[in-house]
Image (cartoon, rainbow, N blue to C red; front, side):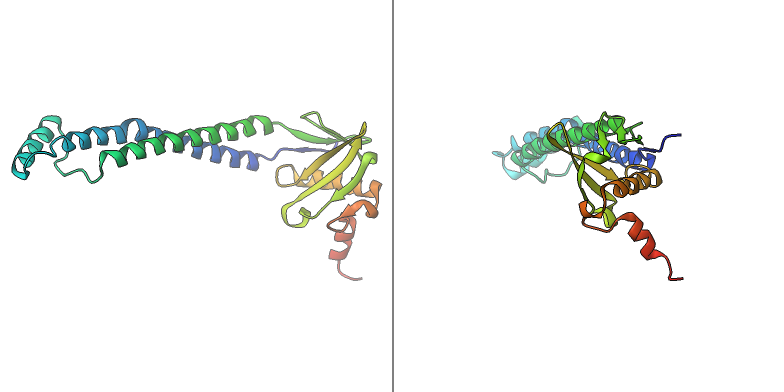
Length: 208
């Protein structure tokens, strides 16, 4: 059975939570921008139309208006210009939240069912990238110890390419084996930013 690292469901769940949060925020902003604040704007503009009346007549007409429309009797706290700005902001934030939600949804669809598989000569992936171990010119492990990310730089047909090992997104054990097999082929002189995995394992063992 080939050594395969599948995309972890826990990371898909992160994408899903972010997407739902974005869509929820977009719905909230949409409600305020298209229903909540426009209602307040109508309420405030109606009150502002009474500005030229004396206080007694203004109070009398305002009571009649709010009673007729079923509005709360309190005086609007904000001016119509402020509410108009708030409406614009709600539309803007709602649009941004929707875009981010769609981006996260794209990540979910792209990542779902993706995998990295080891072949006799290197690695192949579900998205069509291949990494021949013999073509690797450098393995960068600066982020491997803390973030589980290593970058293999390699040459194919005269073009410089990069393959990213990410054991937070993909199954850790099979991906770790792929990395160790790569290191065994390229040698320590092509590894930067950290020791080979075999050395890390050996150093963690107690002295006999």
